[in-house]
Image 1: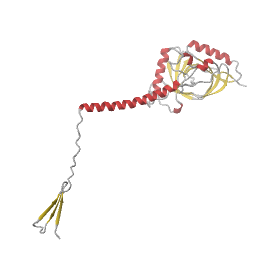
Image 2: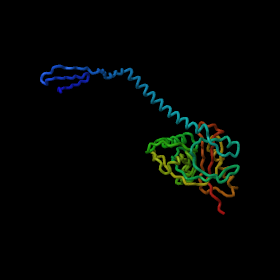
Image 3: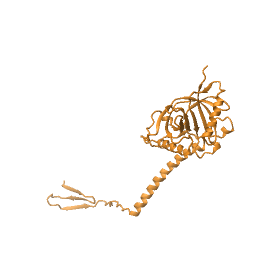
Length: 296
């Protein structure tokens, strides 16, 4: 047996066979199959190509964001394009419609040709005091609405955006300390002694008492207890004079109610359900007057 040595390299294998380990007689060299493995060379991206690539990436990201925004816009639009309707008593109410948004929960206890009695469930509100002496002053109501909208859409400790609800309430009250009770998102309440009004947004029910705290100290969070209210509906735009006439009409109608009567020092509220762009004859407004059961 002859000693042999085998040496191997990446490109060839050499076999050396020798009778004498000290003096090799012959060398047999066999070349292995050569494989040319060329390392991939990276081509340097030009400045122009880098800018084009960045623009395309940003365009793709913008397109994705735009699609999400369009979907959100479409979802919100549907709520107004396909509104809900209350049970109507006449042609005026039949033409009214309200956005398909969350509203305060209530149960209708009785109905007449002029009004209905509702049992309203408890809910939470965010309120602020309005500037001016009129409940439907455009500048004062706009300022208050913006303050509450900022809280609703993220100006709070948790920076959380909350959903809109309906309707907008304008409320008259006998005293500043009296709690507000109403239905949906904006409520305006007049402080009788000081000729001040307060506007309130009704909070989405899913939060319960766990509402984020407002950053604006003029915004206050309150819980509104359940109550009984008599409601009369009307269309068009709301004015102070219109509210007085409707309230007086409701007061007169309730005098003949066999089961319910106006609650002493009870609150009076105006509910507005529609956005500013709604046509006057499609708008739903309500006067809500707090009532109580008559004692037998």
